[in-house]
Length: 195
Image (cartoon, rainbow, N blue to C red; front, side, top):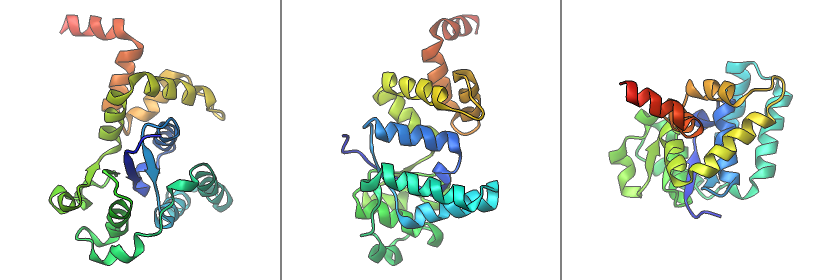
């Protein structure tokens, strides 16, 4: 298991496709996932209010995350929340990162985690796209296997790998470009030769 610790903000795991990819990468040992009850509660609320997910289904998702990643849940951050210098509504996320010595916070709200405020804690905020690009460079074979398995596991509706990549492209376009080039090296060579 990797010692590379990462806190996933609720907004980063809100889209189902990214959540699946990120959790599979953690399960493959590419990094250690860290979450809090606050982060998971925010995810649950947003799935219900913004996506219309039924309460029982949202609760089941949170329970599943806790079951599969029991070591990911941290609580020792609570006393640190008030002292964090970033945006008030996201202080609990930075406090979690500081408490577990995470190197990275993965978030869509980079503006709420300015680097000059994170630097003293030796934490960096990255978008899901940037983070997945790093994971791809760390282990391209593992990330390709994850995407192929993720597509193969999808039901209702089922999706091919290109269909999954189309969905992911809305959120993580740079990462998808790397995956597409790796899956279709001939296509990317021909495209480059024409430009």
